[in-house]
Image (cartoon, rainbow, N blue to C red):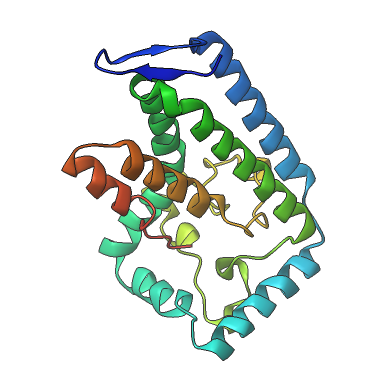
Length: 216
């Protein structure tokens, strides 16, 4: 029986959610995604070609926002360092926090939200497999980009390999950049907070989370 609110009581009827069944499911899906992401490593030259192709298309259309933003983050550490902390941290912290909040406080919406997150993650894995893409920060210097994650790595726990903890760069696929799940998960968090949050603080967080700066 599907879960539904009981009007005027604040209670929910139907199949109860159990954390000891939900947690292993989420861990299993994330483990499968992480393993698949590593196995999806494609040819580096193809990934670079795809990245350059996207960059050329953006420049021809006049929508290359990455270059000026990269220069700002590179030239001003007071902007670049917080942006790198934001990029390296929030998808590990905010996404699980929103899931737990939905589970505990918005249970009637939790299953649909969890399914959306999992399906979009698996779609991202398909994208990584079919279209390995070099992000701008990994292109050669001639394209005008600086890897701010590497530039500011002394300030944080990450090394030069994206947001992976220092020394664990081999456990990440840096060419799994299209589509970006940093953006996808942030958008999911924003939509959940906007739809199911009731306070002005929640609405502010809903707008701020998907608008978070990406310095890489």
